[in-house]
Image (tube, rainbow, N blue to C red):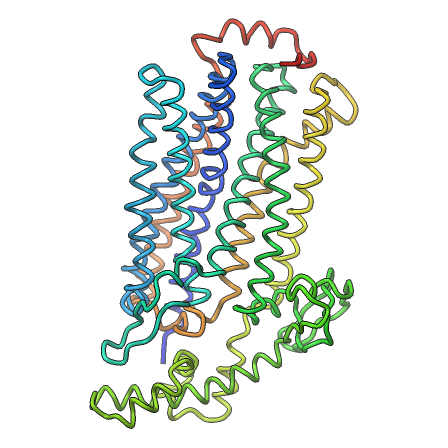
Length: 530
């Protein structure tokens, strides 16, 4: 039996540090490639104003990059301090992508980031552009390897449990690398990062235009952000659809839970746009559905079926009963590794061993579980349906909102309508400033959806979350939670103050300060054709 207070506090601590770290990741991913675009224009046109534009946003990128690195390091140590059995059980697999991330991606961006900031007057234009591109590449490769590790947790391919070592081991690293869940998560996550950076650049540029300050820089930044953001917001929705398709084959319970689909519907299933899910009644009240849409998204057909929660629970119950046989075989092999009967029994039932582990929340030895405990364990495979249902709808709603938002911004940038002092344009500029936090909200909701959706599993179908934690006390966990909250709260205030100070100071550059000020003095004049 396990102390669930320790488990929940361990989860809370990791969630807080992960959510805080993810405040910096999307902006780093998106802003790095926006810098590549801006500097490429500078290299191609030779216009000094684009150097000023690039250096200004690079300064904000640097502030964000430092905080992202600092908070990311803490998370990696937590796997050893708070999730030691998880690290022991799957470390051979999970640790490999993280090690490659450090060697290939982190060292790459760390090597070139200094050249990017301090090499403006020491490198040629093309050489400096190359360093900026390498920083962007390293940042995105870092996300790739981390999401390969996370994707494996949600769809553990290319691995097996070895009864001789009592650990999970890699059997096919290429399967881990090209895991469909990991690939879908990567492209969706980086696209969300590009949207976040675009909203940030657009919002700051709109604020400058409203104030009539640094207008030449603001107009150009606005144009780049509008185009980049429109493409990124469209890709987020398209790739989100691809993620839904990946769930159909690999995480059926997550898909059923985020749709609050308690029972299997005739194909093709409809998608709920409103409803009030109830865990107690195991139903969804006041449901409003659009016919066929869920079936088309998740199965790409009119005949594919999306299984409901109740039917998936029944399957989980069968896998738990089957997994008890695997657990019994493992216990026999601990005593006698040459027991061929036990080994043959294990080979027949090994794919369901993890499901038997779910019983350890209710009974010390799964072999002694009662039928009621088996049913209870089967229903524990259902995540928090109301949270899943509403978090997904808020995230999806924001995704479609960003398409409309960037569509309007792109239209304004295309017809050079920066100069309006009233009406829709001015209202849009104010809105662009106020909605800066929204992509972060959408990104955090996406992370919550992914992580809550795979509960009760740390490794889907392999290791329950409550078995992965370290042997800590409630007091120790509260101490670290309070300590991290105070530390990260202080860092957050420093980050915000540095960002705001840099934005207020503006994109001043010794080569272009005078010319930019002259342009800004004219206020809202249309940007001439270039």
